[in-house]
Image (cartoon, rainbow, N blue to C red; front, side, top):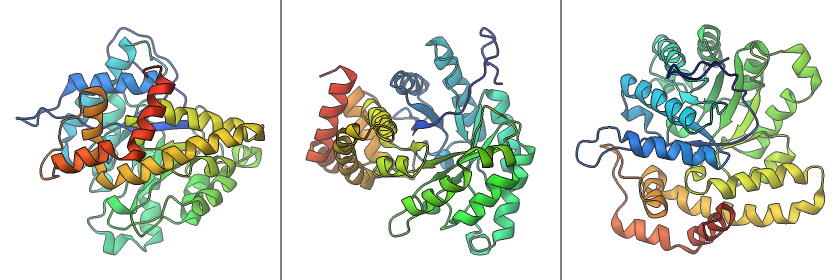
Length: 350
C-alpha cells in the first residue's frame, strides 16, 4: 500500500505491472541550475496520460547530479502532480542507489516516506575493481538493501553507469529466489558490452515465469511481482515473446504513445500472430530512432523534448549540453522524423 503525500487522497494500492516505464529527466532552470519543478510536473503527467510509468532520479534523471534533498523534492512533486491529475493509482519508481550500502538503505527509506512506491537500485561503480567479479559482495548488497527497504526493490543492472559491474543471469535469478522484497530487474546496455540482450533477459524471464516460481518464491508484497524489463526499446517485440515484461526506455519521454502502442501490439501478438506484422512495423521505426537518438544521450533527449513539447532545457554541469548543430541534425534525422510522425498520429496531434 502507498500513501498520498498531500494529505487529501486516501491510501491506495499501486501495483507494479508489466509495461513501459520512462526514466524522467530532471529539468533545471537555465541560469541557476535550480530544479524546474513546473516542467518536471508537467512532464510526469504527460507521460502518465500516455499510459507510461514514470521513473524518477535514474540515470536519465541525472541522479548523480542531484542532492538527496532534491531527490525528495522531486518525489513529492511527482506524487502531488499525479494525484492532482487523477492518477492516484500510478506508482512512482525512484532511483535510490548511493555510494555505500548504508547510504542506499537510508535514501530508500527516505524516498518511501516522501511518496515513492518502488525503489530501483544500482551498485556504485566507484570501487568496481573490487566488486565487479565479487559474486558474494554484489549479492550481499542487494540482499541487505531489499531486506531493510520499506518498499519493493528493483535491481538496476547498467554496466555503463556502474563502472562495468554487470550481474549475470545466475546471480539475478538467485536474488529473485532468495529475496522476496526484490520485485524485478532492469537490464541496460552500454556500447560494446551488452547487458540488455535478449539472451540474458530470456534466461531470467524463463526462471521467474510460471506458477512454480510464484508459489515457491512468493513476493513479500503480492502487488509487486518479479518483472524482467529491458533497458532499451529496440528489442521489445522479441523480448515480449521471450516472456519479458516491458522496458524502461529514455525514448518513452519523447514518444510515449508510440512506445506504449508497440508494447500493446507485441503483447497481443503472442496470442494472435495476425497482429505481429504491425508490431514489427512499429518496432522497426522505433528501433531505428532509438539507435540514432540514444547516441546523443541525456542532452539529446532534453533537446528533443524542447523541440517536441516546449520544455527540456539543458543538463547540470559538468555534463555538457548538445551543440546547436548536433541538436538540429538529430531533430532533422529521418529516423527521428519518422518517429515524430508516428507519435503525432497515435497521440491524435497530427
